[in-house]
Length: 190
Length: 155
Image 1 (cartoon, chains in turn brown, green):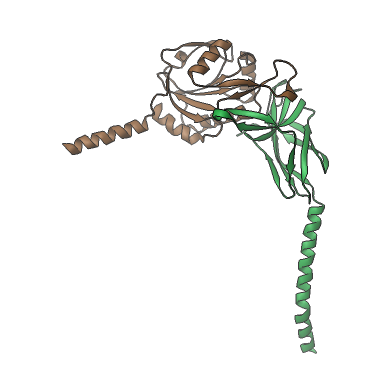
Image 2 (cartoon, rainbow over the protein chains, first blue to last red):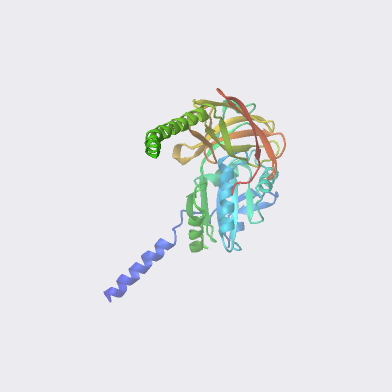
C-alpha cells in the first residue's frame, strides 16, 4: 500500500514538473486592441482555444526587436504543426505604431497570416503591459533627437506562451532563447 | 671532391635555413606594415522608408598600428551612427551611442545583432531583401572606406 502511495506521489510530482504553473491569468481581463489590418481584437478572448506565443516590439527599434521577430519566425518554422498556434507581437509604442505602420513591419519581415501585430490606445496598451509585467520607457539619444517624436525605448525582452484558456504559462528571454526550448514547452502546453 | 661537396652542403644548409626563416619573418612584418583594414561578412536589415535599418560586419585591423572607427555615414539614410545594444537595469534591453571605437593591431571588431551595430536612421527609401546599400566608414589612421552591402533578413 505504501509503495502505491509513493508511486502516486512521484507521478503527481513529475506531472507538475511537466506542466508549467500559471504565471499570469488573463481570464478576467479583456483589452480592446487593433490588428495591423485595423480590425478590432479583444485580447485575450479572441485567442481562446489557441496556444499563443506573445512577444513585444516597437518598429523604430533597429536591432533587438528584429532579432526577437526573427526568433519568433524560427520557432514557427521549426514547428512541425502550427495549426493550433498563433503568434502575437504587441507594440510598446502605440503612439507611433499605428496599424498601417505595423502592417509595413509585417510585410518587411515577411510574417504570415498566423502572426498578429497588435496596437491600441496608449492607456489600453499601458494597462495590458502592466498586467503582463512588461516594462517599456522612452529613452532620448541627444544626437538623434530633432523633435519629440524622435525617441527610442528601453524595454523588457520577453516571449510568453499563453495557453488555450488565456493563462500565461512560461516566459523566455526573447532575443536569445533557442527555438527548441520554446517548442519543447509548447508541446506540453498545447 | 664528393667529400668536399658533402661538407659544404652540411655547412651551408643551416645558413640557408636561417636565411629562409629570416626572410619569412621579414615578409610577415612587411605584410602587417602594408596591411589594410579588412571589412567582411557585411549585411543590412530590411526597413521601410522613413524607418530604421541596422548594418552588421566584421572589421579586421591587419595593419601594424591601432586604428579607430570614428564615424559612419550612408547615402541610404538621413543619418548613421554606431550604437550598442546592451542589457540594462532589470534585464531591460537598451541602446547607447558609441562615438568611436579603437581596434588594436591584429584585432577584429564585430558588429552583430544584439551588440554593436551601425544604425541607419530615417531611410530615404525602403530597403528590401535583395537590395544593396552603401556605407562609408571613417578610420582615424587609414582614412575612409566605402563598402556596398546586401540587404537580407536575419535567419
